[in-house]
Image (tube, rainbow, N blue to C red; front, side):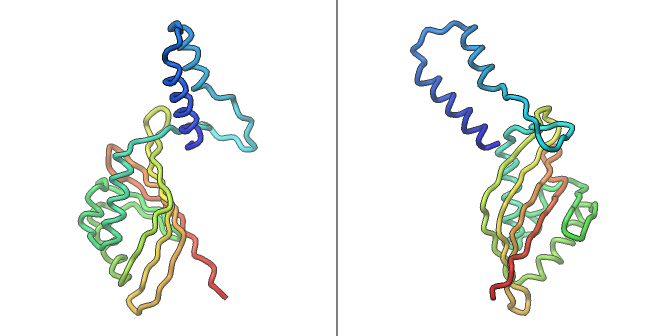
Amino acid sequence: MKQKFLLFLAIGALAACNSTDKKTSADEAQVKSAATEEPKMDYAYTIEHPDNWVTGSRENTKMVLQSLKDYETGNIDAAVEPFADSVSLLFDGYEAKLSKDSLKAAFTTDRKMSKSLQINMHDFESVKSKDGKTEYVSMWYTQKWEDQKGKWDSASMMDDVKIVNGKIAEIDEKMRHFAKKK
């Protein structure tokens, strides 16, 4: 997806550099059409809507990252503020649909289990379906925490956060603990 975006930017930059050329509007339309059309791919697996995503809202990204930062720093009230009234949580070994109040209680309990929490963000992106009906912010990061007894642990995290009507409605979290050093 990022490669498509970079290709689009490169084509746009080239077009801007050549803006002194005398082109008809029909020529310009053909260039724009060719730049946005992609060849149909013959993927090894088929799904109902392949290649269905475009770049989403930066405001969604900002909201989700701030919520995670608030959780990291222990500000649970601020962390749950952007959530919808009903939230689906899909974690390793845990699935639930919670009210915002229950989510706040769960986050409070969970956060109190750690004396310290650190997030090292590696990447993030916001996407939306081409029909505009589905939006996600995805984040890739390392989470490191110290339990109440002083023991540190860490994991590689990947979260898909679904946005509905400008609110966080679902967190689908994938977690991988690191191998123990020998």
